[in-house]
Image (cartoon, rainbow, N blue to C red; front, side, top):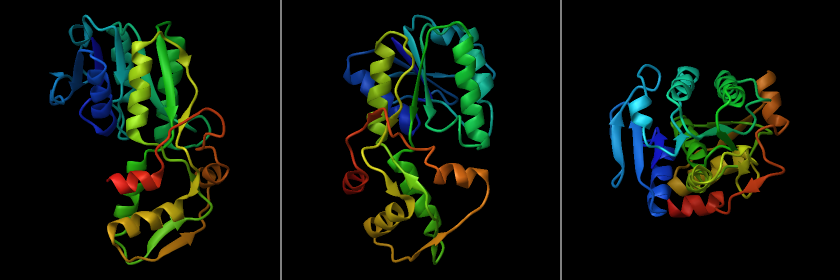
Length: 242
């Protein structure tokens, strides 16, 4: 049996599906206790609750639950205290080089797993196709869509990340495994234009040059995967499917 935290979210739901497709029993931990069809749901606040009973009988935990508003470090500590037999953690490419607050938290969780003396596997992935589309739709509320100039992205399909996490959960603890990125690198502004066309929105995209360490880190390509594993589903294929 595999436990999936955040198993009702965008990624977690697909991880649950990938495990069920492989014939595994799946238990989902979420604050509301819901679960995709075929899995068992348990209501648990990872930041506050004792998780020993929720993890009983599990061979691995896929930790997808995360929030930019805080609490990720406490959630990881609680999972470790509960005795997770093999903790599979999904992180983000560039967390050690891009000075975003949320990225620093993800990196701190990675470091916690590496020094806790427990079996673990860490997979870093690039941004999902879904995120690029969501950013575009949010920006399309304006008459002109702003896009930071010179920013390249390598979006990956969330289903492919879910499949990789399922494979890792069913294997032996492997420490940090090769990063996973999408099959292609594009300038963000070009993908935003593709999203607008797919949605039938007529909006000009305005490239703007920003300042600061975060912008410089993205311009340097620290969010990309020049080496490592790559998914197969392109952004255009994602748009066509969705």
